[in-house]
Length: 204
Image (cartoon, rainbow, N blue to C red):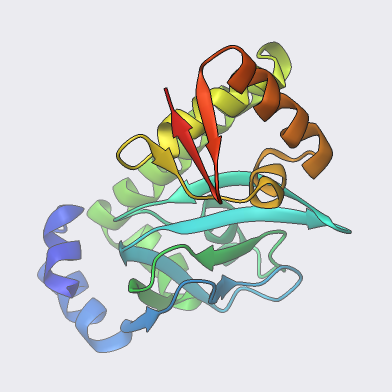
């Protein structure tokens, strides 16, 4: 797994490869496990080697989805915290039953950024890609109606044309209430874009 990561981000320095083997650890997590907890100091940078991680902020009983992390990705907000020794402002939980995480202590993250060109390139790419993603998310929030965002979200999450998520789960991920989601789903069904089944939603 570590060798796959090294090749994937094109690390060329032998010294950095040795440091990764010496100082990084790999952990496996089940669906629902916390990878990062809000309001805790970031001591280790978490990089997804396999699986998917959902990053979100929580306010009382509502959640706001920030983004998903896939293979070879890390949380930009946590990465920035590595350079300032501050607390995380987000939660991150495993979405798959076998999510594999690469763990690197923050002191190495800071040092490697100045010592190794390939690591510096990796962190800059993470910041740039995350910035572009957040701009896209903001544009959707600002200009796209919630009904359209909901349908686009369902299409993106469908497996074989089927989404197995509750109305409450959809509400949390889109930052609204279950009642609003239920009303919009009924509208989408009336418009013959989806079919509401027992604990699942079919894309027509």
